[in-house]
Image 1: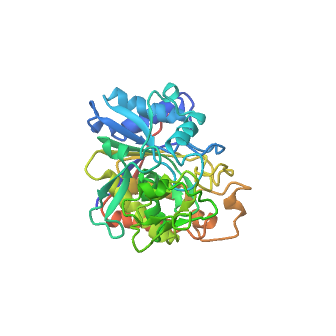
Image 2: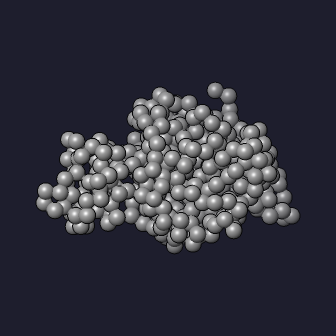
Image 3: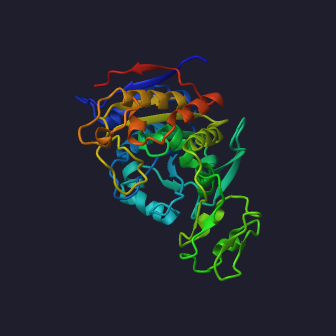
Length: 370
């Protein structure tokens, strides 16, 4: 396979501000090749768990969306609800969190939509062509309703995936709550009886009649349950959770297959900003100091190539003194594994390349935008 081009510029800004620099980067990378005229454009990004301040600033979202609007598109910012309890587990709290972190129509010029609906159950099953782990991915409906998909990713560390970049932002990020459960877990939902209040909302939403209340508490019959995870989103008391965790390597491969489901059959483009490179995900309500210095902005039509380029750029940096990377006593010659030894991040890129969504071979095109 021919090398994919990944366009790059650093954060030096002598005579141009960073949002303007991002606009010039994406145009140089060829975003104008996409026909945006009168098309709905899903711009997928992470709005950050409140308390965490490492997430991408809304200014970058506005800059990217301004370019899309200039080209005739109708962009909106989108993310899907989380699997774990937190302030982004349903659409109302998720929107509150997005607004609290500055993502509003006034600041970005576009609307925010929660892709999988109120409780994370508004999804569609999308076939994964050539999928080895996933046959039908559960993707947030609003994501799939868009004509064009663009991922605006904060490139940072992640305790399970190694790092969060284009593939994690797309695959894991666009999965509904049921989809996230499928990627994270080989098991089926389980009930924490101490939290169950017997409200029966989960039972009413179960399409397979797998939930009973013979003892006043929810009981899930795993012989009937198909593992769709809709009951997790239905429960208002966080009493239902995913079952046994899958291996990180398998999770990474499932994530690649979910990415394929999202991007197959429509124009896509990927932007990753390697700044405030925290050791763990923006899903935490706290963030440690960055593990390496800010690196720059990347853009490409290839999600595999852009992730590989970002990973290589991070691994080429020296650790920041006092960071989790600096504090680590591991030496895997890999910054991501030094921070999170159980990660198998390369499995994601290897599998993504295998199933045909991109290549790890890339040409880095450096742009001197000052």
